[in-house]
Length: 206
Image 1: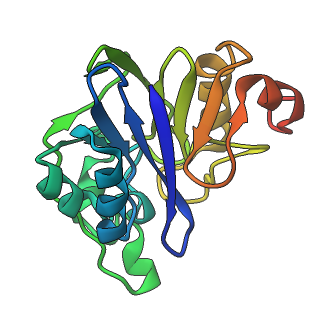
Image 2: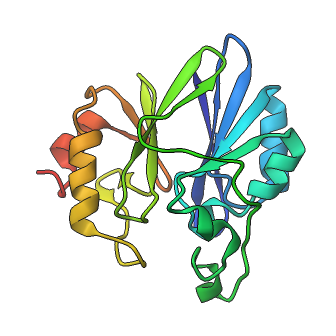
């Protein structure tokens, strides 16, 4: 799969477009804000967007969901434990910033070990709660979309409602660190990294 990155919004959230190069089918991960710019960006790639997937339900990752899904007739997926955040500004934390960021309801739920098919490519869902109750990562043989679970040199915040530092670290050690060292980590914020680099340099794992 070809992966493109679009950093958007005041939180500099990373939105990803992954394209199966054989069929030109695509998936958008975490369209946080600036839907018009995201739409223009996706149009330049001339792909058929099948799904929008949220790695979790915080407002900086869901704000463009509705416009993106409507534009591309794409289906929206999220873990059921974070689904209520889509339509509740308090739960998705935007209300605390004086905003009312909402999304359409999910079209389907993603759970542990579900497989999302994009053309001939596959993405496996792993549930990594700790940053949020329904936080997930999406794993391909070459890369992982880690949302706000794992960052370069750090992990996601755990001081929000439903967060757990111990739980997040345990999930990451169990489900991500066993991946091959060469696997690229595409996080929800900040630069990309690799599993091998995080094993050596991330203070939460050494």
